[in-house]
Amino acid sequence: MQYRNFTSSKVMPALLALCTTLLLSSCAALIGPRDVEFPLTKLQQSVDKRLPFSQRYLGLFEITANKALLSLPPEQNRLSMATDVTVAMPLLGKSWSGKMAISGVLTLDNPHNAVTLLEPKLDSLMLDGLDNTYAAQVTQIGNLLARQLLAGVPLYTFKPEDLRYAGVAFMPTRIGTKPENLVVTFEPVK
Image (cartoon, rainbow, N blue to C red):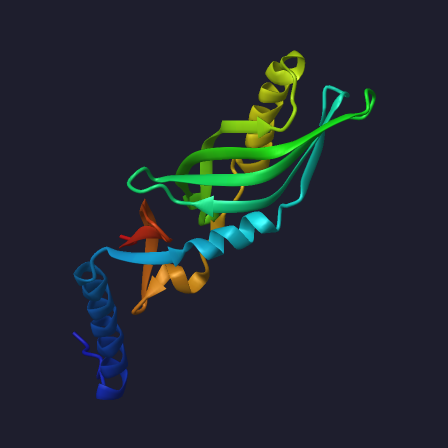
């Protein structure tokens, strides 16, 4: 039987690599979930990029949303948005201005590493001088606008540094809110 003569110069690097791998994998197991707060201003900047938003509906109504103000209602994991809105019927020469409130459930879109809004809905629509003749149609259009403006739109996209900490890869798993912050729980990828 023939024995190979292993020198320490060959064994030591392999042993060091093995120890390093074991140490890093044990560190990942030791590091638990972490909560990271993202200010509401980050979400506000994302929505501001989409405004003003104008759309024509049913070939009759033109609606424009502008100047959004976001809020995080306490303990609801929802995002609310109040915006100035103008609804016009150019063919009839009519126009109304007012306020619109939209809200939706904050959710994590892990494949895109983003926070999005699920089920956006129209909470209220107040237009100065709107007659009852057009109120039902305008409300339906407001619901369409809420979906088009916010459904599935990334409100915040995680940066690579958000997804790594102490050399360990993390994944967002839960989302919560505080009055001025979005709170995301990250857990180590296993």
